[in-house]
Each structure stands twice: as structure tokens, then as C-alpha cells.
Image (tube, rainbow over all chains, first blue to last red; front, side, top):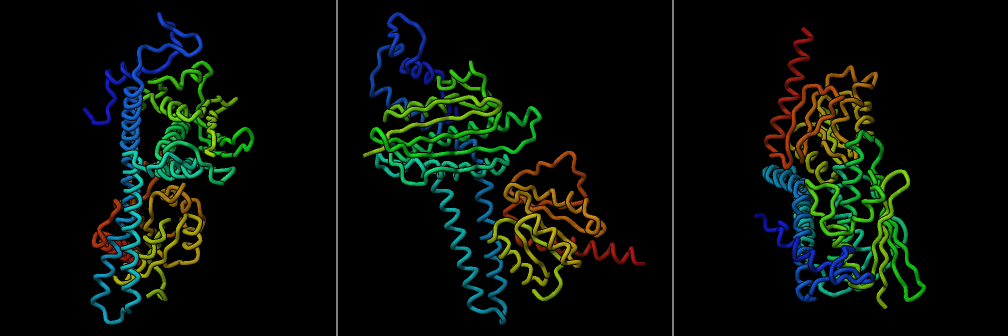
Length: 287
Length: 136
């Protein structure tokens, strides 16, 4: 079994620990239905499933990452060859040699940034403090998925406030929220194209600060993909709900809601009138 | 070398790759110029009638480098010139079924520099031979 595989046992445990709207013998009409829950167990299980979901993201990104790493490797390879050729020539100046050496160093750093960013996302080891910047998380998620967007010819439009918007979550889990939502948006655009649509794929991220009532950050991520029917739209935050059973875990949006729940945040999905969906996130700002 | 008329047009949206490959070709005595997108490539082809080989990255931001073929085919003057095509890619190539591709070569990044120079020399040599045969 793959280390990031989600097992039937996980599903059963997770379903026991997750509030649903199903009626049951101990159903609470307001809070939803719970069986006996050990909160520490539930938290560990959530962290475990979130980590596996990040690894699944990484698996899906692997070919794009390979593409991204090939660019600096190619530059390094040619710069190294150039150095070897120039060393044997009397007409070459030290400045020309230094330029190639600097190029190699620069491209090694670039490859290192790609690797560090990827490993940090996969391991969940971002900056340890429970304080995240929403605008930075959105930008980092876009950067992580840029190879996917480029390959799928999807334009990303980041609008609104770039001011720091600190919230009480870890940076990596906040990035995971955006990665999950953005990946869904990209897949929805690809699904629309599979029906013969030839328009330009577009995802808009619009972030704003609301200073009233303690302050909150509001972020809307809208796409022009296939959209989702009203009935399915109400189920997207349920665990293991997926419109793409071949590739999806069905946990992406559920994880988003659980992460945001921890600090009193919300996430909602609004189907577009003619196309796409808009996912709205609201998070309280840290004082 | 950079004063000599260019024989090769290099198209890649990564500036570091363009710079290093131009230096590399110069060190091997192949005059070349580099650009970063297809609009610049078309302008460079119009301005440099000596260019005979196109070495083109396949993923150029949101453009496909493969579409240089259709742009040349629909250009009244450029379609008469006998270009040789080399595509350089970091991914498996997905060709557009509506696009008629001329003979071309494909190399996968990171390309071995010696392989690249050999392919370029072959492409320039093939064109030289076909020109001589055509001329008599």
C-alpha cells in the first residue's frame, strides 16, 4: 500500500469522528450526530489524514515538479559545459568565467527553493508558530501549483488587499486550504474542457479585510470551470465526497472546513449562474 | 561571433537558459540569437533571413512552442523558407491533432550539451546538403 493511501479503516474512524446530518439514535438536531469521540484521537486522526492528503497532492504534482526542476538542471548543465570550454581558451576573460560560476550557483539555489518548498508543504513543517498570513498563503499555494496552471493553460488573477492578514492557523495548513481549493478549481476547468469548451481558463483570488467586529479577512476564489449542480454543492464539504473518483480523495474541501473551523473561520461554496463556482473563506484576524 | 549572421534561432522563456545556450553555441562557432516568446521569434525570423534552424522550447509560459510551425505556415514570406525544427521539452509532447508537423527532432531537458550541439550541426548540415542538391 502507498504510504499516503487512505484506508477503509481511516474512513470508518473519520466518519465516526465527524459530525454529519444523518439522523441517529443519539442525534442532536442542532449540533449534528456524533458517536463517542476522544478529541485528542480525533485531532491526531485529522492531522494524519491532512498529512496524507498533502502527500497525495505531492504525488499529483510530481510530473510538474520534474518539469520545474529540469529548467535549473538544464541551465547548470550548459553553464558547466561552457566553463569547461572557456577554461581552455586564451581569449576568455575572468569575468566570463565568473558569470558561468554565478549562473551555476544561482540555478542550484533555484532548485533548492523548489525542493524546500515542496518538502515543507508535504511534511507540514512550515514556520512553527500558530500564525499565518492569508495573502502569503494564497501566493505560496499559487506558486506551488504554478506548473499545474501553466500546463493546463489557466490564468491566475490575484486581486484585492496585499496587506498582511494574520490568522490563528499554521502557515502550511493555511496554504493547504488554498492548494485544495485551487486544485479543485483547475480540475473543474479541465472537466469543462473535456466537454468541448475552448474558452480561457481563469481563477480569480480576491482578498479583502473587514475592520469591523474584531476584524476578519474575506477571501473569494472563483473559477470558470464546469461548476457544480445545486444538490452536489451542498455535499462538497462532506468527507469522501468527490466528483472525480478516479483521482480525488474526496477530502480536500472537508479538510479546508475542518482547518478553518479550528479558529472560527468558515468556508462556503456558491455555484456560479452559468459557469464555475466561488469559494468564500472568512477568517477572524489575530489581534 | 555575435556579429555574424545568425543561423539558429533559440526560443525559451527562461532567460538563464537562453543566455547559457547562446554562449554555448558561440563557443562552438554556431552563430545564434535568442528570444523568449513566439511574437519575438516571428519578428526575429523576419529580420534575420539567414536563420535556418529553430531550437524552440515546447512550454513557453502559456504558449505552446509547437505553434511556431502553424505561425510560419500561415506567414506569406516565412513559409517559403526551408527551416529545420528542433523542439526542446521537459514533458512528454502532446501534439495538436489539427497541426501538420514538418520533420522535426525532439530533445528532453535537461539536454546533454554534446547531444544538443551534435543535433544542431546535423540540422545545419542537412540543410546545407539539401540546398546544394537543389542547386545542382
